[in-house]
Length: 192
Image (cartoon, rainbow, N blue to C red; front, side, top):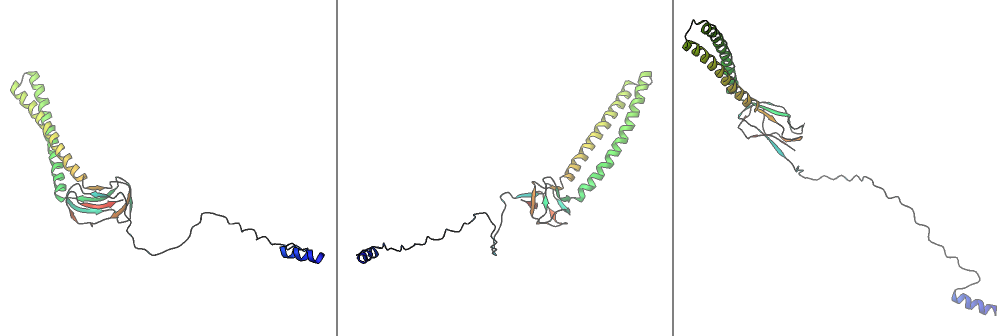
């Protein structure tokens, strides 16, 4: 009877010697972390900055000095180039001479006015002569102020020959060279 029972048990899978089922091996542990994958490929592309600002000339002339090249780093307000006009330099020299002459005329008019002041107090000259000396002194002072103001205007025009970086960044293009004649508004460099 045991054989019969063993046959039935074997038939349904229950034998006297149990079959050991092997469990699958535990999975390997993987650590997830950020890493750099170097996969370099040659591609053609154009990189454009969102903020490209042109540095423009404020006054016409010739580029005397170009201080930057493509790729240079600049800070806002740095001088990128200097534009000059020979006529402005001559005009500044002319006004410098006129200022010296005006100062000499003012000094002479002051001496004559002070002399007239002493003579009018002593009663040695007429009121008309005194008024002429006082007027000559005032005119000489006004002329000197006028010439000095005109010289300041020309000097400011010369100062406008400095092309400044409009923003901090890197010089992208420099479409001109030293010696190039430029007009007011021409682009000397672009900065991004």
